[in-house]
Image (cartoon, rainbow, N blue to C red; front, top):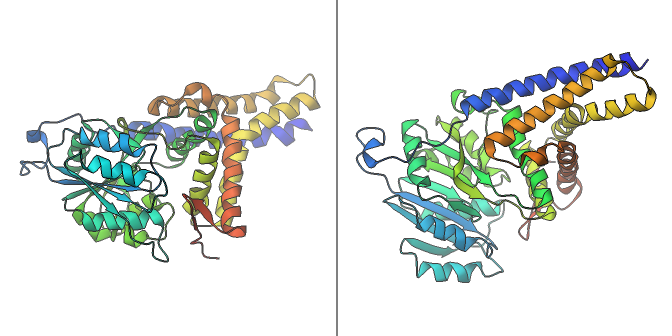
Length: 394
């Protein structure tokens, strides 16, 4: 009875994994790096003779550990025409004092203090909206306080934006990961976008279901940002970056995604607690607070990534001398899963060894998913940086 019970389901799992592997190969061919560092004369369109002014906008709340490195990296950009505006969002640590000190050193840095958070707004969206109001650039770069920017990064991003005739550009930074749980948790983002979302459809299709952006690096033309409604149009979105893509598409704009690991770096979280809370904040919100949808995704991950291992264990326990046929599907499925994780790790320079123990990250993902539901449905809401949010529609 072991073969009909365990063999055929694993064949179906294998077919699913092959589909996801196909999406990975598709994305490897379509996810490009930012353009090489240009001269001013190389920028397109040809009528553009100078680089347009860029407003670099940084919301900062309790970022004393990282904000100085971010600002100093931005100060070294070789872009000829930009301003930096940082907003101190009611920080309770030394963020404000550090920004004030830097403003006396960095000539094009302006520091503003955030206004009280209005009802119905997500803190980051409100901060970004205030930054936009203070900005004067033809282009707007929203970037996080924990990012580090290569000197050529802005020139490359602006050149790419114009050459691709895009209205919005997001770059996926190199993710700095030092602890064990960072290496298990952070690469889940790469898995989700590379194995489950045909990225080229973000800019080729008008369907808003094809949407992804990395809030750590968002570059807009001012015209497209205003036309989309900006952060005000997504003011209660916990995953505002993805919803901004939907808004840009809805308003007729062209968003694009690029690999930015050689231009920008970021350490997203620095502990298990950071990984747990950070992803719990975003995961359920990312599926529009759809409980059945969230459970379906978590179940899918369990079936395709964990069931081959469980099947192998069950076969070994049930039959000390199993036939080779029984073992083929789950073993092949594990190999395909490892190939998926290894290819993604190679493209984004993630720690490959950590991907070989992928069942730990999958179980972490499932745990975070249920915790994300718990926070919203049964708790006070998503917690982040001393604030609690619950914009779900119960």
